[in-house]
Length: 546
Ligand code: C2O
Ligand code: CU
Image 1: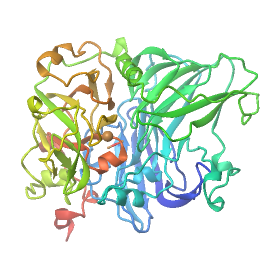
Image 2 (image 1 turned 120 degrees about the vertical axis):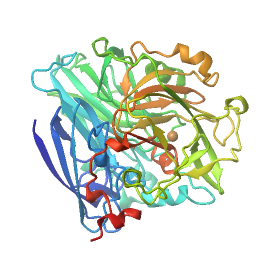
Image 3 (image 1 turned 180 degrees about the vertical axis):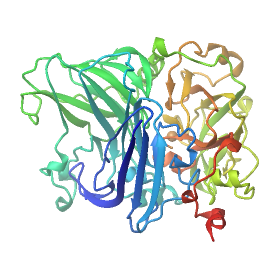
Image 4 (image 1 turned 120 degrees about the horizontal axis):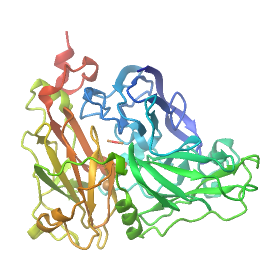
């Protein structure tokens, strides 16, 4: 196994990914950042130098389980103190123990929205084969893009009255999108800037391409299509899928998919690659890229109109794709039973006059001392020691109406989970504070993959007595991110076999910012000695002072 060293300078740079010029948080000047390539079993070392002038940084390696290195997970407030501005340096070191398609992104405040994101591609070890074949491997990273700064967004979200971030101005495919410059002051927007010319993927007729598609959208759930070409889904979040064909791929923030596409259409022209907002009423133009048959010029505009994608509110078709995802038949392995059930009611509510998201009436706030360090060092006053509830009052809660949730509180309490036990989590969706509204939430777990056991269709809340029997324990897919649909429920199972402290949260950046997550601990006594480099904030100061 090899060790790959990367030296990253995190800095602000002016970028015009959609033709509109704004400051972005970049890695060595790039947004998206460089793709990390490695082979299963390799070690990745990233030396991060934070040269931002006033802003902290932390980087999460999304989908990498960090077995034995929980302190490298990159979640500020959970496992590490932030990397300080003004050229502080921090070294992440971890092993990529499973081939697949993964992501990285900022995990501090709303910094993902500012442009710090990229891919981690882990290939299979020499001599190991994959359950599918292709000629070339390509990456496509999707992002929604805002013109307001993350400071403006964060300030609105935490103000009274509440200031919502709104829909994104554009959708980026491999860091390129298109905003209509006639809508704004022309000095900032230049439609002929080459930075915002569409990404063009060149293919050779007859060959098959593996497209690794990942989304790190801040808000939007997306659809993805290649005009006239069908896609065969073969991998999801680093796990092999029983292959299925689709014209349109739904992808939520935090998910990755590999699809196989054969260049089998009339090769004398180009075709549109499109991405569109789904799940929320869109006001963002279609994101565009070009599927280019060489030797047709790579930037030749396709002769057709780009598709506007499936209906944004066709939840049934999104749900049916989620249900179609099954583990590849050669890679099935599910614990038949679980030892604990945690049902998490997802609600939007007011806490002290501020709009927040809560799970079982607890809205997550991070303590000044990161949990991992507090638990390992026995700082029992660092956070609320009384665990949050394992369920909500199903008998008396109507998920279909606006609830006042007067008991919702901000909390930094965490779940304690028996090491190596198997746990089921059911996410239960509900109405928001707006009548007849329920949103889609992509839930992501750190440190683990989980089996996706089933989805409710929104017609009734999860009932442990009846619904537990109908869960798929035969061939569920392993994932690290899964959608929760409007009024629906999503059931998942995982084994708490990775010592550490981990966050499980909605991957919509403003939702996490507003408390939509839980933190759990398992096997803290098995965690090795913590590196001093993660310390320096809250009560950890006294551990490093001479
Ligand atoms: Cu990609 Cu905690 O997230
Ligand atoms: Cu959410």
